[in-house]
Amino acid sequence: MVDLGKELGAQSYCFRHFKDNTQVIERLKQAGLSRIELCGVHVNFALNERFDEIVSLYRKNGIGIVSAGVLRFAGDEKLETKYFEFAKRAGAKALSADFAIGSTPRSLKIAEKLAEKYDINIAIHNHGGRHWLGCVDCLRHIFAVSSARIGLCLDTAWALDSGEDPIAMAEQFAGRLYGVHLKDFVFDRARKPEDVIVGTGNLDLKRLLRTLKEIDFRGFAVLEYEGSPEDPVPAVKSGAEAVRRYLGKNDL
Image 1 (cartoon, rainbow, N blue to C red):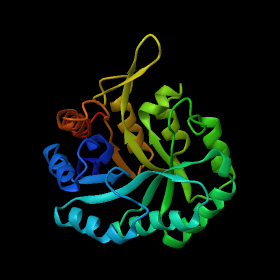
Image 2: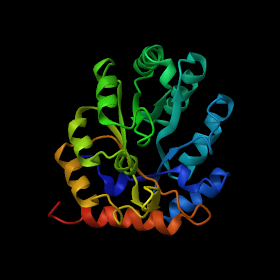
Image 3: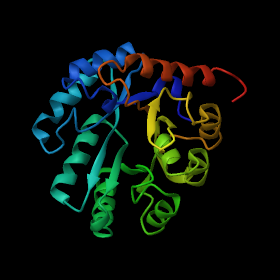
């Protein structure tokens, strides 16, 4: 398994209140992390003229860019090529992705071609019960009609929202699990989700980490917390500490 004690990161959407990447870097370090998945709040993926500047800023500050996303794939090859250009310059091995429902299977074929060309995998983000790729059956179908370049970015909280078991999903799609968003929800009586520190809601964090170890997970893993946008550091830091606390025990 990838060493999550060292390689654990955060989704930059946690820090969406802060638009400047120097502010993001500062808060990431305050949370005790040195890896990040960058989202569209902090990178305009249509403007490749600034890619080197952004990558250099993170690299200079000792931050590894492990992924970019969640990026929308709809068969626009010119735009989607830029996604891969950014990942290549950043040294990332995967992109987290959403596929527009009306664009498949064409968008899948274009994405596969680009993924092969750049040697970078695409990890589908299972965005909740109301999303067409939120359920296991839909994901299973997509993987059946696509190459191994298309895999999964398992968002643990949105899996819960879909009524799925994120741990069972990790096991079922182990061979195509390219990324994990460590995220946790509680739900009110109307089924409305609320972000909580990972491991304090409905996610069995210990069992998930044990499963990732058992399947020899080699992808990227980032914490995601959407609560407290103006001050997300305490929750992100607590989540990182919880992950490392479990990893430090011998009973995983």
